[in-house]
Image (cartoon, rainbow, N blue to C red; front, side, top):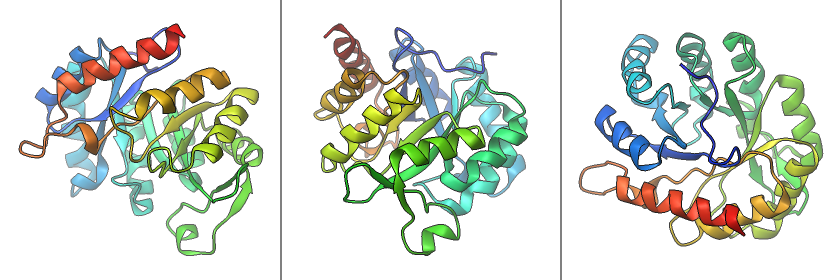
Length: 247
């Protein structure tokens, strides 16, 4: 099984939630494989239960598994690290302070590990205090270049920029995208992204020259009745991604 996500034209890979193994399979097909399927560690009572279930997702998607925290919950950081060591997924979601532990336990460089940073209201600065204890402390605002260097030191692959709130932080996000491009780092915008704003959000990263982009589109494409991510919306997203790369 591949340890690296299957990027569209080596640039973009979708990240959507999977409500079941069947839903994961349908979304994987709809994205023509250019997707990682988020399964949240917070939904399981034990490491053993999470590992047993997530292996089923890996089996039907060529390992396109994204081990999630659960709404960015910093208290899930250690569980994500432990289960990722066993599962060896293509993608791991982490709070800023959990990146080093996850990379060390994975024991390889191919799996993408993001580090969660948040907007600050100041262009060029991000909040890196997103860990279990640091998220309860005063904001840790550092230049985006420093955040990228720290994540590289820890073996991280990408900036997870959350919460985007759609395009509410557009100017800040633009600066983050430019820094990621300049310093050869991946970018994962997430939070409040939907079928209406996703094109502009991804286009900003593409135009900035970001090497790999993994947009997270979650609640806006989930069927409220079933809890499933709608495969037809995933297919729409794929077409939008193709469009951004043609410009």
